[in-house]
Length: 344
Image (cartoon, rainbow, N blue to C red):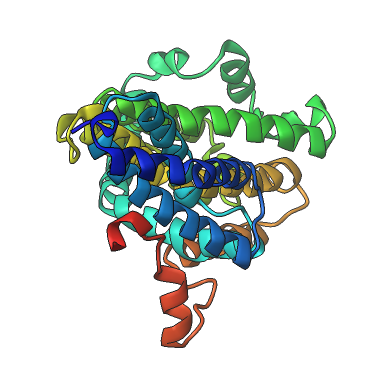
């Protein structure tokens, strides 16, 4: 029954017109409020509940009217404001580093372990290939690198001549980010791109170790990668595992559509990418300041490499940042935003 045919319904619509204008103004203010107080947030929830009830009534009275469209748009804006993620406060950053990143790492841990095995297998295959067919080293090394090794000089200790350590660290960090996040992005190709990146890096590592071993320089190369290599290779496996998880979301979507499944999986793994970037920043600093320095001894490099790797494992396992005790605190952190319209 239309409101025009029902005098009581028409009277109800006119009686609430001023209230709807006030609710629309409050909804506009709520959607543009970046840091609401507790009172403002509770007022927004109450406004949402009232507006949702009125919208349900108007839909039954005027299902195809301009008023219904306006109220639907206003209610949708309030829904977005109510359910948007909280701002990055100190508590949000703490929860990100303490909870979200370990949860994302745990979600891809089995895949990362298998990719670490694939990396080791690729390194073994690269060692065998170059050890059996030394002429194939030109496929994984530049002519300058080959010439230097054949004359008894590693290319690793010449990178200090490229610039000061700070600039060198920035360049190394950029290169590591490109390679690692390339492994993540290529994982969208149903996981095959991540497998390719891991296999090729394993082949290159094993092949270069075999080539330098043939010329008595393998210890020097191991000495160079000892401090930064464990974390750098682990981060590469983690990023590739996250990319493989994206490919799995396309092969076996958990949502209604593959696009929705991919978006959901990306949101779940986004904290892990932040962790990878921060870990690569530390690796870049180590590789720029410590790895090429001939004054740093092997025990010191080993201590730095193992220490940094242990720190990474403690962080990703959730044991680095202690969790607060108390059921009340846990409840306040795990409580989500409930749709007020669903409570009525």
